[in-house]
Image (tube, rainbow, N blue to C red):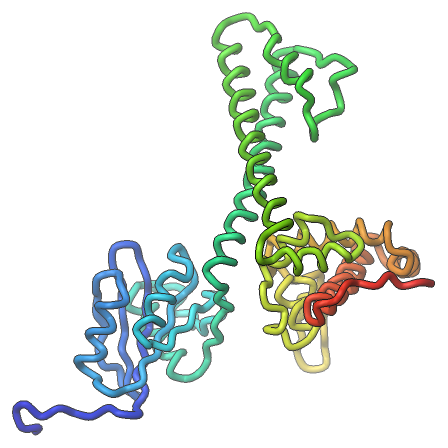
Length: 358
């Protein structure tokens, strides 16, 4: 036994902490070498964990990991601020047994993370800079506004049709961009009771409020493009056929540092433009594009590919050849990969795109 007051030196040793993060508490498992030291609950802050590690394992190298979730990267930045080498991990990338799937508990989750971290089985996701993260949040908020406006417009037209009201021919077919005249017509629509009128007026008011918020966000993003610190990168991206302002700023905020992708295949995998595979022995089955993707990027890239295939002669020619041996929806994915390669080149070399000539 150690004499009273003796301090063990853990200098150079690795201590691993698997953290299952919740709003009101953290469940933490500490592992030292091949042994589990302790699993405990603590207050939801990095300083508490830091004090525990420093007190019980002085001089050690501290490693931690947690699943990406509601807290974003705030916990990561706090842990890193105390000198703890932390990873934020995609939950789908953590090795999980069938038993762990069927018997899910916080302590099991923290042990699983700690064990995988110790075994070197975890790969952390990319952590963006704080400024870029907040700009990305604004771009994603814009996408949410666009969806909400579309939903409210569908509700309004559905309500109109349900109540047997016909939209004038000169006003019909404008579901995407509503004119002030059409909005005025909606407010003048007469219904049998005040109850129906209240539903219609409130829904129109909400749609108008969302539209004003969207205009405000768009003005701010245009200001970022003109005068912000990312203006030059955005200008270069917009030199590529099919890439507009919103596409460019989405690409920049979702990828940020293009150099973190070693090659085009890795970038396509991140976006979600690679096929799913199921191979065993001599059999190899290649399916549709994988469900695993960056949902903000893939939709933008595919939409931009449709635009680029009309504006760029070489892509238009390539698309025509592909359509002779596959469906158009499959062909556009190939075009999206080619477009992604051009985006990677422009961002990596910081140079404008030069249009190819057939």
